[in-house]
Length: 394
Image 1: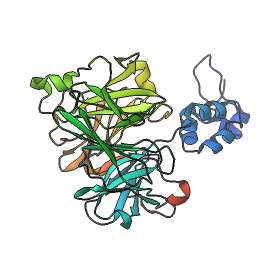
Image 2: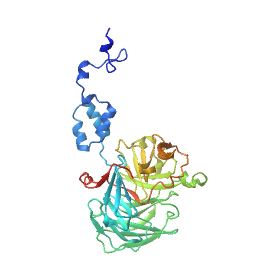
Image 3: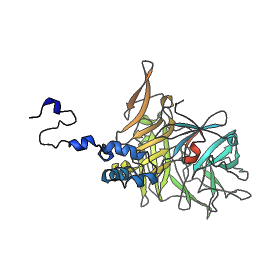
Image 4: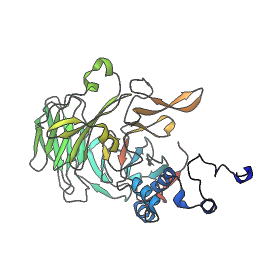
């Protein structure tokens, strides 16, 4: 029988299980690290380093492959009401970076795509221009005579295929102006509204040479810039209870957003404190996305643009909204796995963590998305060191 002195917590095991050998205890290996810790370490590596690390041993390979991120998640960009400083935050690490952009003085953001911002001068939507906040490249556009409600572009303005579409809705009509970077003027035409201008509308989404828009009542319309045609899309009308049941959901903050992923259209209806409802367009019909599909999705929702990702292991099965949480500690998000929104609240003059289940009221959260905050592609790594960073949250 072994003496007590020869026994230690590290060598004691249940009867029938094998104890670690003395040699293993004296010579620990990185391969013996717990799998959760290995995955956490691997998640902080860039793709190239992740691939190199996966060749070390079997346990490292399994951990590296399980968290390998091919896609990059977007960052939040917040425009301050005064001054030239713009805030950038990684929704995963939540570290604050500030970027001085005097070029955007007295300007408001309209849309973001492929790392570019589409801006207009405050108080005048006629003065529209492109701006890349990281390269500082600015591309001007001719004066737009249309006081538009929504605007979007198809791809990077440096591409020959880029087209900008601006739309003004009324109860009966949709007035649409189009322009390519480098053109001398916008081309404008007016079409029947097809019912989309009556209710709250989503952002514009470009897919397969068309711009799509859906409203709270479920009307989907599209504009084909090549032929200059605007039409209602022949899909069944999607009726979200968040928009129709005014007795139960009438006073809560609501939002509707379109997103495109690999040629497929998705729409999400959100209502404060309720589970977001996500649908996918399949064979000209909206189908609610299954729990299995939601588990692989990450949705980034904003007033100006919405993004979908399918390969973000540490952020999957969530919706991230373009709104800072209480005390600016994180952004508002919803977890499909936990069926909860994250929340911060005051309790005994201190800040503690709480979770609100669907149906619970929270009057301090009156908006899901803020117009001055949007999602943008992350900055290049070589630029981060040059930006003013802070480990403290404002």
